[in-house]
Every structure is written in C-alpha cells, then in structure tokens.
Image: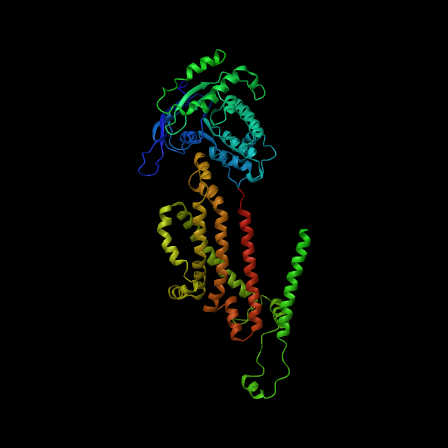
Length: 287
Length: 275
C-alpha cells in the first residue's frame, strides 16, 4: 500500500445531459492521472474544459459518468473529511466569524474535543495564514484575500489526506495572490499535505506544482501532457524568473494553452508528450 | 449634520401633531348658542348629545386610565393594563403555537420539492381565508371563546411563517450546503448550524408579518367573542357611547402594535448577516 499513489484517477469521463435531440457530448473523457503522497499537483486548462468538475468528482460533490477514483486504494463514496476543499469563492458561512468558521470544521472533524483544544488547534491554523488579530471579524468585514485565507485555514485545520483547491486565487489581485501563494507553500512545507490544485495561471502552476497536468479544451477534453517541474523545490517568487529553465517551462506551458490545447481533440496518445518534454527540459531547455 | 436633520424631523413631527390637535380642539368646542327655532328639534334628539371628544377630554380620560392601569373592579371594570395583558397573552400563545407548527413544517416543505408542490394549492386556498371566518367553526369545535380566539390567532399567524420558512430553507446557498457535505455535517447539526442560521432572516421576516397580522386580528376576535381583552374593551366603550375611551384604546392598540413590531425588527437585525 505504501507505494501506491494516494489518488488514482482512472478513465474518468463526465457527460452532462444537454438539450434534447442533441447527442450528449462528454465534457472530458479518458482522464487518468495519479497524485503521490505529499505531492503538489496542478491541473491547468482553459475555462470550460471541466477542470472544476474533475475536482468536484474528487471531492465527492459530483459523480463521474464513467471511470473511478481511488483514494488510498478505496473508491470514493461522496464527500468526506478525508478531502479538504478550498472553494473558488471561499464559501465561508457569513454569519460566523473567521474563527468560528474554522471551529465549525474542526468540531465536525473531532466532535469529542474540548473547547480549549478546539480553540488552540484553530488558532494554530489561523496564525499560519496570518489572520492573527482578525479572527473575530465576520467574512463581510474581511478583504477577498483574507476570506480566502480563512478558507485555506479551514481546509488545512481538519488535516485531510488530500487538499483540493479550486482556482483558489482566481478572484484576487496579483499582489495578494503572490502573498497567499507563499503562505500556501509555507503551510504545505510545514504540514506535508498532499495538494491538488486547479488553476489557469501558468506562473502559479510553475511556482507551486511538483507536476503539472495539462488539460485540452472541451468538449471531449483530455489530459494531454503531464509535465514534471524541473525547477528546484526551494524556488520562490523572487528568484523564480532568474532560473533559465523557468522560461523554457513557461513557454512550453503557454504554448500548450495558446495553440496546442485545442488540437488534441481526437485521440492524441495518452501522456505521449510528457516524457520527451521533461527530458528536453532537464537537458537544458527546448530547442 | 445627522443631528440637525434629526432635530428638524422631530420639530416637523411635533408641528404636525400640534396642527392636527389644534384643529381637532377647535372643531370640538361645544356650541353654546342654539339657533332659534331649533329648540324643538334639540329637545327631540337630546341636547346633551355628546360630540366627538376634544383632545383635552381624551388626555384627561387617558390620564385617568394610565393612573391605575392594573386595577381590577370586577368583570366590567378592569384597568387598561389588564385588558392589554389579556390580548397580548392570547396573541403570544396563539403565535407560539403557530411557530411550533409552521417552522418544522416549513423546514420539511423547504427541503422537499415534492412536498412543496403538493402542499402549495392547499396553502394558496387556506391563506386568503379571513381569520375571523374560522371563528364559528372554532367556537363549535373548541366550545370555549378564549381558546377560540387563540386558535384564530394561530391560524392567521401560520401562513406567513410557513411560506417564509419554506422559502428561506429552500434558498439556502448551495455552496454552504456543500461546505456541510464536505465536512460530513448531516441531520440535526446541519439543520441547526447551517440551514437555520442561513434562513433565519427570512424566517424572522415571516414571524414579524405574522405578529402584525395577529395583533390586528386579536382586536377583532375579542370584539366578536367578548369577555376580556382590549377588543372587548373597545366594544364595551362603544356600547357605553364613551368615544374618549374608545380613542384612548385605539392609541394603546397602536402603541402596543408598534412595540411588538420593533421587538421583531431588532430580533431580525440580530440574526441577519451580510454576504
């Protein structure tokens, strides 16, 4: 068991029932990938390719039409505390303060805990996302970045097997996004969590991910390539752009999103591009 | 600036009150001179016929009532405080019963589309029935006038609460329910910690509407069944031709109604949230 991946996605597809007398077309099909323990994997693709649906299926909030997802070797059956989710629009309960939002999650995870223990545990995670001092504010009194920090604290605080983040920084300005990305990396390093993150931001994927899954455009979207990030793990936003390999990787990802993502529609061989790309990157760049 | 505007508003309000009361006082000055030739007619209709009481007479009457609001001199001589307490007590009892029925039922209706559609035609037919129209049926089955007025209060309070609770529950945001699902929060904990706080402002708005209707209805119900209460008081004073007492009672009814509404207004503010 120790060697099997934490998440194994096999032959996933999703068909939404469309308007009548029209052939229902799968949004995505034949999607398979794995996520190892402690790994941070990014799924990147254009809007509408079904990224969020993939994440919702992993979360158990949505059902796949075909295929299956194994977590720790077991098929998923609905949502579970094993999988923490950071929602795109933070989804905080607006009538609770920041701290109470985290407390609600922690109490759900460990119902038998004493109040003091719950409070101490929550404070630890609120401190990790630098919300110290704003714990007792309602979500409406917090900025967009702070709301998303609460969402991140809430998801990490229940110590799930895997964290699923659905474009968590999409609605934030560039400055705030950078700050929270750094915080996410710090918490990730501190907690050794497995993280699956959806984004459409190439730089975000390069900064955060160990591996980057590239999804083609829908309908019939696929995972066309799996790119292993060749940059050293201690990369930071400040030094990232000085690494010569950064531009090769960035150009490769942008190239995919801008031109090649639409061309994989009919059955490019699975993950055919992954290995050559990585070899090329590791030997000092493409072309 | 705010305080200046407040002072101006208060001044305008007082000026309006003064104008209305002044006009009223002038209009009700007793006419001393009787037109000649009408003496016979005056004798026939009764020269002591009381006109509309003047504001000063009403103030005197009010003062008499308010000096001992809780005196009890038997069935026909109870202080205004006691009469109001009877009415408020009935309203609160009937209202509480309605809460017990409407909120759980509203929760059920709000969570089940099937139930919502199935019950909707009945609610639509029952809702517009005047609460007082239930009175004969209530008197016949319950055979107790006090309980019947409580029943009438219940039946008129149920609808706004039921409809608002169902609407509030069915429009709880999907993302909040998804949060509950991913945290494995189900059943009672989900109902109390997610659905109820999310729907609370809508539910309390329904309760506020219900309370307003209940207070309107209790006066009419008590006028109909008699016994005790502010509605009975109004009817008795009408039969006594004591319009000063009637007007005093009207002012009291308005005042209590306003206080009840204010109480629910602040309750609503307590549970409302900003997204």
